[in-house]
Image 1 (spheres, one colour):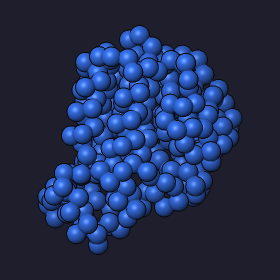
Image 2 (tube, one colour):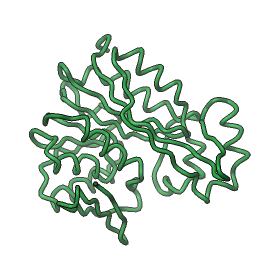
Image 3 (cartoon, rainbow, N blue to C red):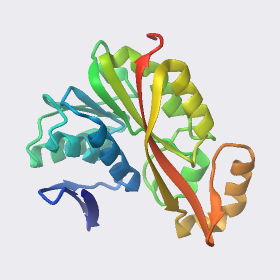
Image 4 (tube, rainbow, N blue to C red):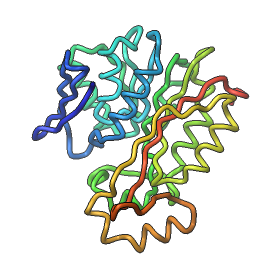
Amino acid sequence: MAGYRTVGEEYRYDIEGKEEIIIELHDNVFAPTGTSEEIIKAVSTNLTKPGTLLDLGCGSGIVGFSLYRMGKVSSKLYASDISHHAVELVRENAKKNNIECDARDGEIFSPWVEKKFDYIIDDISGISQEIAEISPWFKNTMCNSGKDGADLVVNAIRQAPSYLSDGGKFFFPVLSLSNVDRIISCASDVFECVERLSHKLWALPDEMKPHMDRLSELHKKGYIKYEEKFGLILWYTDVYVAYNPITKV
């Protein structure tokens, strides 16, 4: 079973006990989280053959690097992020791990005009912007995802068909700290097939508990979802795959 751990300024990811990927982290680049691990596990299980793969919103690069090492990438890895700091870090980490990677900076698909991929993994920020402000995950990085956290993900879903090869697949996580219904509805409008691959519950970090009034307000408006159980505030990450676009955009 794959797993991860953070050691100082490094992040180590074990692939089935056979290999360890070590990447450097940077204060200005989004660090891997449990959602990163869920994406890696769900995508690697779903992919039965290697193909051209884009890690969209790549951050430090761990998702794409792990899938590359698992043999899910047929050629070089493609990666992009709106943050120039992230792209520079990905290039450095790719060299240290001997991974051939074409990394570019730009908003959503703007670096990939006229390029198509067999697999696109969307890990662009997908939680409520108000939640990001009080969370431990976005300390020095931006999250312009809108009040309900769906703006960037919805934008990526709508554009994805134009960047997928025939038979291509688009993978995306849905966090309940965003407008789940809006995101899934958009995916269903764009793709014939939208399937949930995994579901993972998380306990709300202690740092966020003093802000329950704010979370409750967002919950009542339908912007986020959570439940109180066993004395815990629980939220979740679902990983989806979408394919067979209804229309090209």
